[in-house]
Every structure is written in structure tokens, then in C-alpha cells.
Image (cartoon, rainbow, N blue to C red):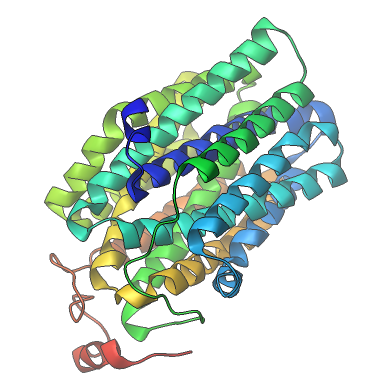
Length: 404
């Protein structure tokens, strides 16, 4: 990592921003379930509401395109990182239901705006032939950052025996300091093509939109209810949950770059097919698992399979008009979060009656994604976006259609 700081290039900036985001967010995420249960006595209903509120800024991510009328994408990304850090820093000071809802929304505004702009800048700054490999490397950096965060949890909460409030404050302030350093260190970089500054929906991107929608719905079940199950059903402590996350990120650190290169070799269609077949098996297994060790193994495999979702981004990059990237990333984040805003609340209520049903629904989402993935061509490109549609003629004409 030190070597990258010697090169003031856009790829290095992307990796360092990713590192900061993952460091701060990983600490917030790994402590969340224990924090809300121990300090605010959350049940499945409250955690569902909190997670739905967390996704509201993601649902509103399309508004990023309007912010870009005022500031550059690079500046926007750095400001978003600062907001994320502030939101995490103040979390521990408000261990009540309403306070947790408010600090979660603040943190989430920074997180989702950053993720939107970071994806846009990545697809603009990285060459198509290198994108899958670079995204794999970025996942490894995320993992390294998360591991650093978990080490800080052990130092602050286990060794120093300090409370949640100190952990959240320290990691949030550290994130702010790192944002300031990279803001001063890196110059302003130019994007390849001038981006559209309006909301754009194109018919020929329909498959990308649907893949993004189901990815968002499916991921909510993993992020909200798989982790909650570990604490509620199996009684995992903070140290045990941290250890589980630690294993997740060690696996990603070791294998994510190889997964990126693997996707580059086999193509998006095959990569997503592997992911969705695996997720169907994982979600059905979640519904029946009774042993905490098996549940933990499923959780690690589940997390690793999500690395294959790199293929959705590289698929879009191959079929996209270069000027559409910033706008489409904003719109796609909103599409990704349509289900994410609703699912945690509804499934949080369902969880009270049948946790198994929640995971069966996740398997259903994975089946839908699998069907869609089989429609990706072996060599996607502009004009060759899908294998089949309601009318091949409409597919061919859709390249020029723009619904605004």
C-alpha cells in the first residue's frame, strides 16, 4: 500500500477512498447487532426499521446527479466520506431507538453517495479490460481495511475494555483525519468524457436494471437477517461476531483479486450463474441450519459469493455509452434500493413468525437473478446487450431510445 501512495494516479485515489470507507463502515456494521440489542433492546421489528431507514439514502441516490451540477465527482466522493465518518463517530452517544435511527441515516447518506460516485469514477478511470481485476483488488483493499477495523475493536473493547461510545468515536475521527490527508495529497483528476447531468433511463440497459434490483433485494436478506440470526438464534457475542467478520475479510483478502481475474476470463454470464446457484443453496440452508458452526460456514461462503457481483458492473461498463456512466450509477443505486427500503421492515415482521420464510424468499430472489443472468451474452457490448427479449427488433432499436 505504501507503494501506491508514491503514485498520484486516479487508481490509487480510488483504492485509498475505498480503504477509508471500509475501515469506518466495517466497525459500524460489526458492532451494530450487539449494540442495538444490548443498549436499546431491539427486536426484529426495530432492526428491520433501522435497516430500512439506512437504505432510504440509497433509494435517493439518483439525486447525486443534481449535486454534480455544483461540485466535481472527486470532491463529492471525499465530502461523502467525511459525512460517513461523522455519522459513525456520533453513533455511540445516542444509544436509544430514535437516536440510532438518526445517526444511521446520517452515516448512510455519506455511505451511499460515496458508493454511487466511487462506482462512477471507477468505470470512468479504469480501462474496460482491467476493470474486473481492479474491482477484485478493490475488494481486497476493503478486506484489509475491515481487518484493521476489527483489530481496533479488539484493542479498544477487549484489551482496553472501553465501551461502544469510544470505539465509534475513535474510528469516526480516524476516518475524518484520513479523508483530510488524501484530499491534500492527491491532485484533481479529470474524467474521460463529460457526463450527462440529468437522469437517464435507457431501454437497452433493462437487463442491468433488473439484475441490480434483485441484487439489492437479495443482499438485504444477507446483511440484515443472516447477521441478526447469528446473535438472536445462536447467541454470538461481539468477539464472536467480530471473529466471523474477520474470517470473511481474510478470505476476501486472499481470494478477491483472483475472483476479479476469474470473472475477466470466464465472462459475466458464467460468473453470475455460479454466484446465483450458490446463493440458492446458501439461503435454503440458512432456513434449516441448527448448528452455529455450520451457520458461520454458510455466512463466510455467502460473503465470498457476493464478490462475483463484480460481473454486474463490468457487464454494464461493456454495454454503456461513456457519457451515461455517472447518471446511470445514480439511477442504479436507487433501483438497487427500491426493494431495500421495503424488505427489512416487511421481513422483520415476518421474522417474528417464521425466520425460515425470510430465507426462502431470499432463495426466490436468487432464482430470479439466475434466470436474468442467463440472458447476458457471452460477449456483451453496445448493440449486443441481451441474448433474448420480447422482440429482437426492439432490442436492436433500443440502443437509440432514451426515456428521460
